[in-house]
Length: 623
Image (cartoon, rainbow, N blue to C red):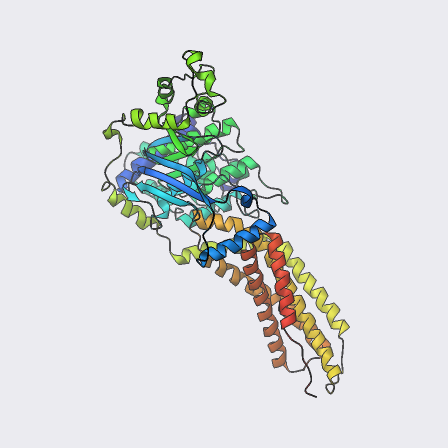
């Protein structure tokens, strides 16, 4: 139930142990509105007002080259022939036989800030491609024509990362991390972990009207205080998304118990929402959520859009009426063409002009998606049934462009390009993240994942210890001869077993890397996570593991088998095995990144292992 924060004045703070035991107070819509209003006033007084961002797209067309006919089927023969043809095409020996298909066809429009825009369309209408094109996250294999501009500046690779955020419909997270840790990592990568802390310190230090300060402080604490060991921005996002109950629960996966599908979807939203970007493009965020939870989340997003001047575009499949009323504008996308783009209140009026009326019993969102369908269009016809003719999507789009689009007044559009340059510069200065901070965030996460995967590493340690004891007793030689080739073969056999076991231990990297690849690719695209930061962290974490495993093997086998008694030779063998272990781990990580799937990576790993043993050679005596 909604209630104002004035009616919920908290008594004096109880002891810290009592606070940690109690559940956090819920954040209502009124509480959130009061907090955002206070946040806006404080930023205006500090002179760090963030700029509004108007998104314009002109003649936006996205094409994909696809094969047609029998060659489009992914059979083994077709894949081989297509690969050969691609190779010949790159060598200019022949031309490729592909047909261009338009996913988005000549879309134009303006998305205004401080407003909520709903993107409607049937599955396959191009909503995901449209949102990715607006966010500048389009796949490189697609051809983009036209312009996408933020405040008149065309979007490209140099557009600041903090300015826009795309929220995918796929929930890809590390199963070993909790919800809080996942959102925390995103906050560190996006550089927003200190904004609320600075605001809270400014409120505490302010001298003036005591009641006003107390009121602001109470609103700030209610919105951002929850749990320990987390920044305040993360706490706020966890509260508005309703993740307080599962904040310290592992995300989980198919084999590990974790949070539910709806909670994963909210964690995916929070992962990008914590960045406090100026433009949000959200793709099917209601998947896995009930209508009540969807309404709550969209209501909080509406308050953020209106009070923080954000530009928000949300794609929903079947929004209920109460959720639909939270939006200011609607974009209706059908087969890659914009059929309607304007205020929500005028959507049904446009189709009435075309001769179709929404019944009072019908949900407006369902009506808008069905009125362009050939199967469902006739039931909404308000004229004579004998005169009804199917109105194609092209005709709707043409009517909208020619008659309805010029109506909005020019003064409704946003400000000129030069407005807000000072605010953008200030924001850019506070959002720049050093390479050292990026590395620290990645390294701390790798340490955390190492702890969570400790059973695997303990098992590997026990395994190599048992194998070392077995091999040392098989080759047990207290007084070995050093005169014949047969004596040398015994030493070569023990060394060969050491190399084999060290290489096999490195193969565990294939499964671990394959499991992490989808999450890495998502974070590289959306969080600007550089590959060097992740790779260097993984390499540094693997050093102590290699030292431990090779050290155990060398210590348990060297003197028991009866190699040279020199301690220098002992160190040399230890270093050789250590280098072999590092080589095998790096090799299998590389093969996993190439193979992309478990089956392909295992095949490549087995082939590499066989190649190492075959081309490693063997010793032949001089005689």
